[in-house]
Image 1 (spheres, rainbow, N blue to C red):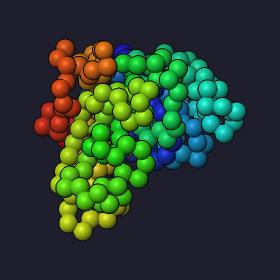
Image 2: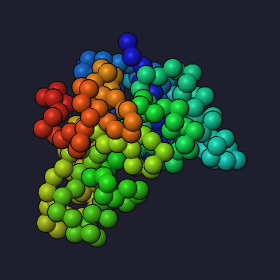
Image 3: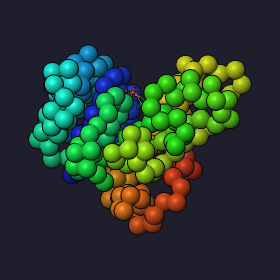
Length: 219
Ligand code: GRF
C-alpha cells in the first residue's frame, strides 16, 4: 500500500477529504502521518480522530529556513512517503526541499494559476474583476505556486460575491473534489513529472485537466 504524508498549517478541510477518500478506498494509499508547522492547527485533531500519527515541526524553533526545511524533511522521510500532499501548508519551501520531493509532491492552491499566486487570492479575484475563479492542483517545484499544473476546477464569479463567499465556493465546489482526485492519480502512478512537464497516463498535459475529468466518486 502506498504511503502519503500530509503537510498542514490550518483547518485541514482538504486533509479531511483525503482521510475520507483513503478510508473509502478511492485513494489506494494510507496516510502515514500528518505534519504541521503550527501546534494549534485544528487539522491535527482531524488526524488524531482518524487514528493517524501527527507531528509538529514548529518553524519558529529554527534559526533559518534551511534548518527548518532540513528538520521537516527528516520528519517526513521517517515515514518513507510515496506521495507528499501539501494541504494548506503555509510556508515557503527551499529548493533543497522541493528537489528532494520533486515528482512526489502536490499542492492545492485557491486560484486559477497562473493567475493569483500567493495569499489573499479571493480578494485579488474581486479587485481584478475576474469573470472566473477556482483552484489548481500542481506539482511542487522551487517556483512558488508555479509548478506544472495538473488539475483545475473553475466557476463563474457570481455577481456581488464577497471574498468569504468565494472562499467557501472554491473550497466546497472545487478543492474538495479536485485534490482527492489528483492524489488518487498520483498514488496510482497515473501522474508524473518529467522535464518540468506534468504527464497524465503518459501524455504531457498541454493544459491542466478540468472538473470534467474528475471521476464520479470525487464529485
Ligand atoms: C485552502 O484554500 C488551500 O487551497 C490553501 O489553504 C487552504 C487550506 O484550507 N492552500 P484547509 O486547511 O484544507 O481547510
